[in-house]
Image (cartoon, rainbow, N blue to C red; front, side):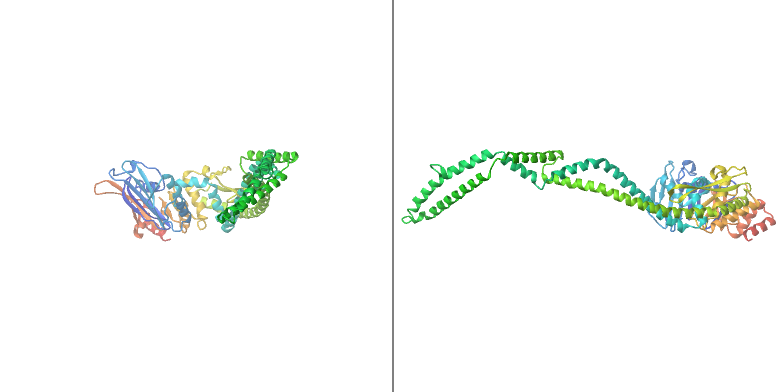
Length: 553
């Protein structure tokens, strides 16, 4: 809701403050007094472009500032958060146009671009001369109207929760199917690699151990020769080490009694003699354990060759790394097989959700269809009452197979403006002057159910008078029970319905320049202003009485 509008140095406005009522505000004044200029200034904070031609005083910048109560405007607050803007109970939007022509925009003192301003302000102000065509072209607006009339907000919320789950499940299924497609391309190759590794069946550190064993068996003759030579040198040669050491030991032991100091050395020699005997025995045992088996050697060579081939193929160096790759392949192939189970589960879940969603969408569809006849009749009656007796309004509802956030319906409002039998979309069939009255007729039927921003009607009563103008006033009053309205009018029947009546006029300032001013009229001033709208500059007593009757029927 607009709490206050401040205008400084815009066109022929020096300084102007508008503090509208929360319900119906009517603005009147003589032609050329500046009513449209006020709307032009308001359009600046809604995102319109401007230039220095709006500066009346070339030495000061132009400032237009709007204060909006957004404490209960949850959608707008979410939009602020989405743009990383500060959320306050009162949102202040300001436009400044410098003498140089540079324009700046602010929301709660934070600089924003005109694009951001244009994205956010439709949630605050619905300026009918700008917004009418846009709204009537949007399918969601048509659906919102039908849903408000059908009074199934709870059913729609329930459906939208189901639809959200349905879409997420659908997206997850698509993700898994794409993943499966990608994996299927690699599954055959990965399975081949896995089978190759599993058939090889290498154990931890096996390739390294086998390589060492192969190296040993490949050098059997050399090993045997070395072992045989060592054993011969220790025990069997003419000057065998053990025999010579035994002789040394006997000589040393022979002098124990006369030279006791040699005893420790004698013990060490004896220990060495015993150790060499053990070494000779182990050499003999090793020699006996080594034999040449050509078949075993060939088999071992094949096993090692296979190991090296797999290491090279997978570009690793150890058996442990090869076994790690085997585990990875097992996980990949297993996941590929498991993903099909997940896909089948999601397909079943999606089928169940589809049935539930279809039932909810059908219920919503039936609710919309159920109010079409009365909506069409009421709208046609209202159109006739507001000066469009030849217009025929029609609602077209088509169903789709695909679900959307609003069900399965495509809703379109059609109009035959002159009983031609040819129905066209509203935005194509109605003239600019008729568009505002059509929107008024539509919105007045859903005022209590739809959350609408501040509505501004610029001369919605153009081209009508008498009873039609009276009915426009009645509809505006009805709509203003639930929403803030600002209406510029030339009709006394409409002006009299306002909860607040503002009068726009021109006056000379102290420098002799003509400037636009606006003031809130008192009850007595309203009578005279409306009487002037009825009877001219010098209204008769009858006009005054008529004005009083319009104000206090």
